[in-house]
Length: 594
Image 1 (cartoon, rainbow, N blue to C red):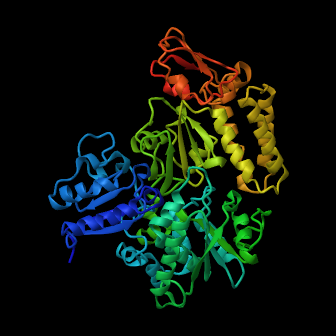
Image 2: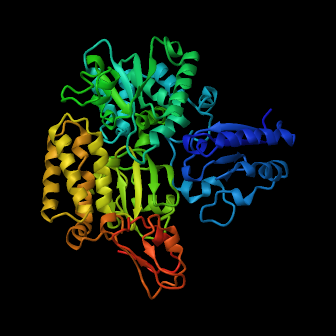
Image 3: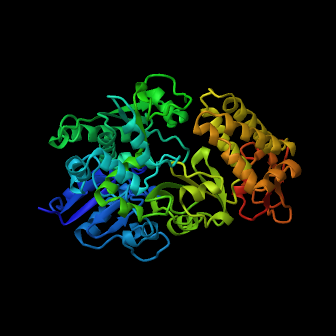
């Protein structure tokens, strides 16, 4: 018998870190206590997208979305809503809207188009029956009963699906090359080694809809003639690994993995391989080396993995999001998929929207949407009162896009023209409190630390670039340093074996291109316009505004502020550690930062 209400509780990493599992248990107890166990059912799901506002609970069929639910809210919620039928208005997620609002009408969701994320937050990721109930594995059934491998490859090619891992290469062509490569044994690999700072797209899909990845991999195996697949992911994703393994076990039990899938002659099995979290293992040849038990380092191509990959056999590698798109293309057809997006970039793209933005979280938009619409309509605009400054796209291998280019549309070619890259889907929004020289240094520090060291210019060149950026942020830079940064960037891009090395200078090049005035301010004026670089920041007390409240002196961790109550105070510049505690403590704008 169907229950009157269903509570879909997010148990993705973001919400579980905010005690969503404990809240689920408290809800069960309170529902039982109030005698509603026959009317209200609790279901656990993956991420719904609004990660910053967890724990999130959707009440179905009321279409009410509760956010930031706390344990102490549970009794009131059960009594008022589930017993008396009166939704708890103060817990409903409305964003900037003052009135109650249904989920699909909220600006965060209204302009999204969810394909890859269509099941995330809607089904229990640990239940194969729920996935099947949402048309899961029907695409696989269609493939094995009605399509030849060539038919599948043609469908994927005509759909225009490009790899969502960053390079944007045609998925259909990749499959075609692997199928045509000679060899009795071939492999399918899912690249789930998500290493970009601020990126959590693949993790959320693995946690929220693992069967979609498996279905895509099985279809790929059939298309290229492989019988063995691997999901390569980082060990730092324990929940994703746990749910993937449950999905593999359940699919095997149901005859959807293993021998004679759908009573056909096709056999396919999938295993999980855990990596140690090296950023370079996101590069496909380094990933292959890691699976083989070797140190994860890229190798010269050709031969490409499609010709000679895992253990020297033809190998197809796609990332999580690419595989999750496959079932939709097979189910609805290439023409349907091609009609979504732009001429050269079909379909949708998943992004991890983070930084100084109101609605941070996981989103999926059709290709062709302007960045301005993503940031201001879906993201809700800036979280602070400060203006927008830039958005970093493509992670540490990407670049910073300034405000005057916000009307750039989201597709591979348009983003590339700005100097950034689509990447796997990280999108970090910055306001004017961000120092672009410091941002470039942050990302270069990451890529320099993660360089495998095989290529001299990547290993040594990024080190020299980081030293120059550090000098600049400390007020020790010279104008000729800017030419050196460009020269080193050019050599690193030209001489690195893998795409990670080739794109490592992008954050520096784009910040130099669009924010060169900030570099000049650091070098010539010895000032950081954003007030971020500590060695270039000075905190001073305006004696005309200081009323001697002593708040700054009490907050100073090194006791470098002197003065008597009701009289102006003074900062000892030699002892000041530039922490900013005094600046934050002052309520009278008496402390300046410059």
